[in-house]
Image (cartoon, rainbow, N blue to C red; front, side, top):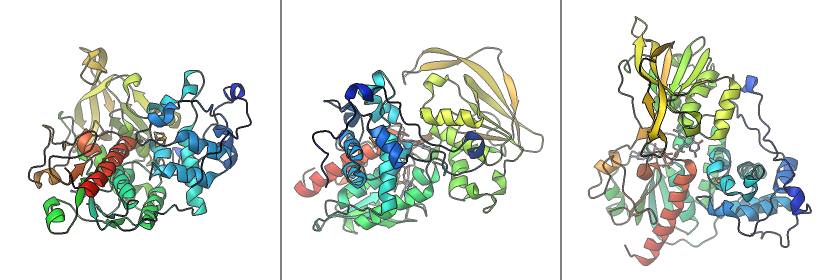
Length: 482
Ligand code: FAD
Ligand code: SF4
């Protein structure tokens, strides 16, 4: 494996680096991309990547790595880009991150590596996510593979769910010589990465390539297996000879608002709406015809302010919506969506109605949605989440004509595995209880992590849990101690 060059090969004096502008991500023009599902961000060229890498001020104690949930060695991989060793940079990232082409695209970097970047205190932080994506795409284009070369351990690990937490566990453990098999309930692998996040942000081909890489590493996959129905966790451990099981089943159950009119035709959960687009291929319209999702001439609103909400409404725009609104009950400061997605959505023409909450969906007279009645909100004292609580403003109700509404206010735990695994501890909301350091559950040999433990979070937090679980499974498999 290539070591980072020492001393630094960066010819630019440190003082000058602070004056270099952050290299912009080339992207499709807003008016073009609003009508297609092709990726918005086009990726750095080699030249742009090297220019951006040259900005790194090489601090003595880089916080970027500390603030990355999987601990990517940012300084080292960036120095390898400066040296022009892109394959070496890819190998460096892969020491800690088995899905770099995905995290480089969807990580909320402002909350992690780039949030910790010292440059960010004075100028724009280093474009770590963009550089990670560049290196991962280079690796894929060049067919570079860093495959494990370890003797088989004789141990077998089952991973339930093929989202980012499960894939991380699988990728880390196969590199220890264990036989790892991932069981996935759906016919497609990737979890939310494939059925939630739309093509224009994370092309399915990228996920397929990362999965092929994992297959080359030796990970085995089996789709259409609903653990808890097709096979129980106890059967995996007691009859099928698995030495440990990791549960990474996510939090895919939609949550509704429980307001009048939610049953009307035209009101969807974000989960159903995005799954239809992604897995039933409505995004390939007109090649794949999903008549319910022909939104030409229709007014559409999404309720919520997270990544899911923005993905849903930006997809609606691409499917022909005439007007596309975000209705969010707090202000932009509290919006959980990634900053880049909010910016992109605005540029594409999405209208944001902040401090707005629906109170009733109104029919059009023939059983379909015709309008939504909303109330204006104002922000009161902080609630349990630390964000200021939205409070309705008396007498402020108003209506917006609508044909389609998508509810994206959160999800909850899918209960199948918990209800079929005796002795598996859950909290009162039905999420699996796992130790935050070791990801061990109340059942010997059973580990859990990602959204099924924390509730809906992010790709990189799920991967961080996967890393901790893999380390802890390794300890369990080598010591036998619980
Ligand atoms: P998941 O990705 O949910 O995967 C769980 C997998 O387990 C699924 O494939 C499911 O089918 C499978 N499964 C469930 N039950 C069983 C069973 N009984 N047997 C077998 N398999 C089972 N995060 C970001 O960081 N950046 C973003 O930009 C971002 N955008 C998002 C957009 C949308 C639309 C959504 C919904 C989420 C987004 N997130 C984003 C959140 C992120 O995708 C999740 O936090 C992350 O995918 C959780 O990973 P996971 O491994 O815990 O579970
Ligand atoms: Fe940053 Fe995410 Fe890469 Fe970590 S994995 S360095 S948080 S982009």
